[in-house]
Length: 178
Image 1 (tube, rainbow, N blue to C red):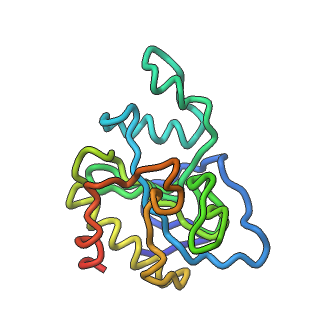
Image 2: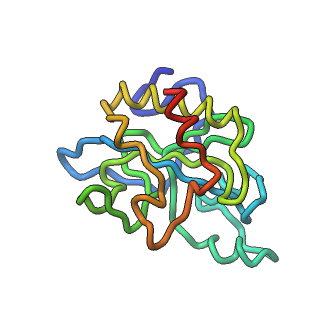
């Protein structure tokens, strides 16, 4: 992998409007692993892309209607097939963590990189996703000098609000690939 201006070269890139500059002198030192499916347990990558681009159209599905207005993003999405998609340059702040705290630091969006896995709390993730995630983490650890103990789940930084990546995410497998 190689990045130019915080964008990984050779992968699909969609520029999300849902980002901004990180606070001055911010050290990027954490990766947050998420899970997303729209609607839950439905794997339509286009809907996730539309959400991060503010192009999700409300319709007949109640869940889609409930999230269509949100202004959210992530730096990366890893699809069920293991494809890597980027939405926000790594040196900008993506809006993925919400109200969050990690080891006494609040607002994890400021100092973290968000990685969404296409999936949900009730199903296993794919081997391709773990392979891509591990390669991405290896790259980000070098690019941003992120320690292994600062790779965490959304549920760890917002336990009152979030459960992802969920009980089916295999942290031991990920660690073995790193």
